[in-house]
Every structure is written in C-alpha cells, then in structure tokens.
Amino acid sequence: MTVQTSPDLSARRTAAIAKGVGVTTQIYAERAENAEIWDKNGTRYIDFAAGIAVVNTGHRHPRVIEAVKAQLDAFTHTCHQVVPYENYVELAERLNAAVPGDFAKKTIFATTGAEAVENAIKIARHYTGRAGVVAFAGGFHGRTFMGMTLTGKVQPYKVGFGPMMNDVWHLPFPCPLHGVSGDEAVAALERLFKADIEPARVAAIIVEPVQGEGGFYPVPEGFMKKLREIADKNGIVLIADEVQTGFARTGKLFAMEHHGVAADLTTMAKGLGGGFPISAVTGKAEIMDSPNPGGLGGTYAGSPIAVAAAHAVLDVIEDEQLCARAERLGARLKQRLAALQDSVPEIIDIRGPGFMNAVEFNVAGTHTPNPEMTNRVREEALKRGLILLTCGVYGNVIRFLAPLTIQDAVFDEALDILEASILAAKG
Image 1: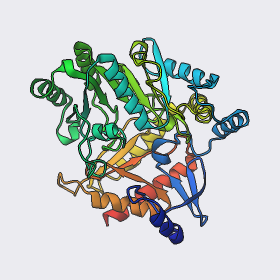
Image 2: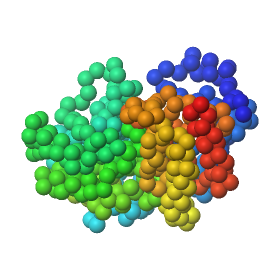
Image 3: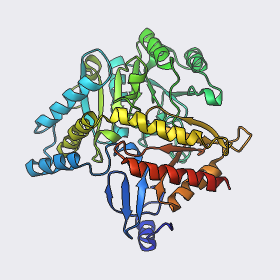
Image 4: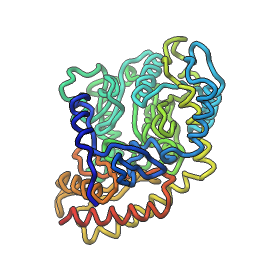
C-alpha cells in the first residue's frame, strides 16, 4: 500500500498554521467510523491512535452521535454559570459515584485536560494555603504554563518558553526497567523534603497512574499506597492525572482502581467526551468546595453538547463491557508482540494494563534507546495502512491506543500489519 498524501493541503497547512502545531502524518481525514479512517483520496487506515485516547468508544459511536443530535435539537450553549442545565448536574453525579474514593465528592467541568490540571492545582493550593507542587520526570500534564511546568519532558514542550512557574519540583518516576524502584522514588521525595522544600509548603503531589507521553510506564505496585501515606501524614493533596488513563483504557474505568487507594482529586478529559471537548476534576467535597464562587469555571466549561456525549460514553462503556474488552484486546496484543521477541531482540519491554499498551526498542544487545527503529516501525505501519504513535523521553516507545470497540477482524488485520512492520523495520 502507498500512503496517499494531499500535497495541496499540506502546502496550505504550512502556509496557514503555525509550525508549533506539529503533525504525525500527512493524512487528511475525510470520514471515520469506529477504528477506521478514510482520507480525502479514499484510502483506508486502521486507527491505533484514537485521537490520543479520546475515542475509546470509537469514531462516531451511534449512541454518542444520537445523544449529540438530540442535544443540538434542544440547545447548544447557555453557559452553565448563567443558565444551568440538568445534564451537567447529572454528569457530575455520575462521576462523583464512579471516581474511586469512599468519601463525599464534587465535580467541576472544563474543556481540556490541561484546564483540568490547572484547576486541580488551583483547588489544592486554595484548600491547603500552600504553593508547592511535586510532579514526576517524564510526566505530561498539558501545554499551558502550569501544565508545561508540571510536565517532566523538556523537548518539545518547554524549549524556548522562558522561566517556568515557581514552586514546582520534579522527582524521578519509579520505573524498574530503567533502574528506579518505587522505594528509590520515595527516597527521592524524602530527600526533596530535606534539601529543597519542607512538606508543610507542599500543596499537592500530581502523578499519572500510567505515564502517557513519558512512555506508558505504569506506577509499580505499592507506590501509590506510599504516596497516599506521605500525603496523609503531611496534609498534602494527592492528584491522580487520569486524562489519558481514564474511561476503561486500562481495564478499569479509572486506573487508580488498580492500586487500592484513592486520590483526593482526579483529573480527566480525552475519553470522557468520545470526541467532544470536555474535561473534569472530581474530588473530596471539602477540597472541591474551598474556592469561592466564580473562582472556577469557564464560558464553555461543561458544554451541553459535550456533556450529552459524555453521558452516552459512560452508557456505552457499561453496556458493551469495555473494561473487560480492554483486558482481552491488550492480552492479545501483548501475546503477539511477545512472540516476536526471539527474532527481534531490539524489543526490550512489552507492557501496560488493559489496552493501554506499549513496546519499547533498544539497540540490540545494549541499553541504548533506539528511536530510529521505533520511527521506522511507525513509518512501515503507515505505509501498510496502520496509524501508530510513538512516545517516551527518548522516542523509543510505540504506544497502542486503538478504540476499545475495534472489530475483531479489524484488530486481527492490524496485528498482522504491526508484525510485518516490526520485521521490516528490523531489516
């Protein structure tokens, strides 16, 4: 298969759009359905990106589209802070019940994941009266100034943007594959408290249960419990950034369910709206109620159209048992990749809970990351009609984010393409 590009559109895009908005492919989408995309030339692609974990329920799921059409026929926008509406209240009630934690909860809505993170930090600082925030190397929390500061990856997110926000501190993320155990990460936090900032000045610790952009590294077993103990001991708000891990992707509705402890605040976006922009912060009621009226919100926050889509997404996840399906799909993918390891020694790790999976490549027989081969796999797959994404601080990880609703036949086809692409990239 030859990848069809749109040279005229590519030229127009280059002329019209700032180069800071990068693109992974030169495919220009014409239509999409479930796990497939067709470009303007009619070429079909299998989508293993899902808009970066946004359409977990597939492109244009019929129930999501039906819900949005019904809302369009009612009203499109009033601004909830001016004229509120019931589906906003109902979605907050559903998230309060669904987010891990055996305590009273409240929710706010925003539009993007970065906004959710910004609001979580605002809420934590207001509640504690403290400024410090602890984040992790390799983490990704958005491109706003606070989100960018929290993000533990310089290129391309921080380069040239000047001083970051004050009182944000980074710890090594616990990743045994790269020589950092959970105990060593905890020890680093204790050293931070001794050397740089006393815990009484720390408002929040923010962590992804599975790092997204950083390389799809899951938090090791027991680490979240240690963070929970440290947070409780020192009056620190624990924030789980579930923007990419949320909504059945890891085999649970929320990834924190794998860890047996609850965060004080949970940020979410992406998969919640099924393709429509919405984000949320859900957390302990006493913490969420700390800011004064008007301190939170936004003109488009909790758009009635996106809220309607989110209700349908939650219904689909439950009715189609997508958490269980994520486990089955991920197991099949990891099994297929494991079968290649003997012939492809560059594969050093296959990981991830549910269907939030990744494969990592090194130069064969070394500990040297191999971003060149990783990119060749992506390019070979694209030639064959499969859209893949890379990630990781060294760019040597391929992450798999196909819709959880992908048809079995399409999934099998994608696995064949993936195997052929890895073997071709090895050379």
